[in-house]
Length: 336
Image (tube, rainbow, N blue to C red):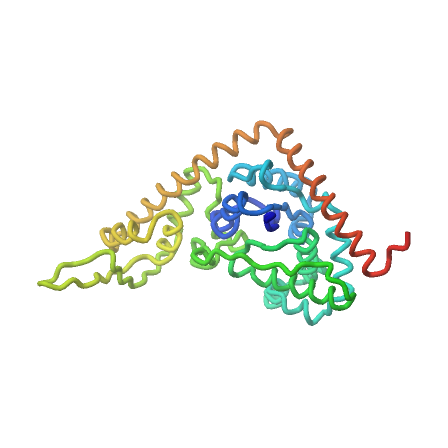
């Protein structure tokens, strides 16, 4: 059997953080062998946030470096940028024509912006249609997303089903979301979801001092933990030891160590918030250092990095062109 197709992408809107890595990017690397994998730099999506030529160009290059540094292999995966494949925006317009405004008003990004009384641009409003085009152009079977991003795939599924029904032709596959259950939403240093917009991140390629500063700023709200791995001998009976631990520190720490290791560490340092933060700092340093050094090495040869990105765009466009020929034929605009 041929491999199923997987597609996902990241907007080049700034430095990635460990929430991006554990929520999505880590999956990218692990799934390269199992799927026909396509990984996209979503630069047109980024225009909703960045409208500065120099900044966006640098961010695109930086994200490509990030992709290669975490272990994406261009021999196994197709890595490309969205703007190299004009069929993305062409298909998005076709989807716009069959999509209602009330339907798009259900999107989380739109509702969030509306709740904050922001002046909402059209790109933010109809981004689900561009995202649906991103996914559906490649006959995608699965899309790896965080639990909070499942709606993106639901929009793509709805749009594929509606197009197929309106034009009476099964042009598009209905993709499925692939979610890692044990990593749903990675908390930031303030306990909210880790996000650049909240300024609560730990950068994925941070220097040691950045790591220390970020971890020491973590809000230390305490929660009660009943840990069965740590036992206390009372007479002839064993009872689980109940202790308190800093919730936000622990939720980040569990990304780097097993529950059993953390149970012993946090029980031994109960109430010693600085001690557990220092342990977290060392664990994050151990994880980030080899990634950071690999990225620096890649940055010394930007010609190679850009050649890989350009080749990926050419390969992706060949796939997208075939799908768009079918779409144009189906909707009735192809006359010759």
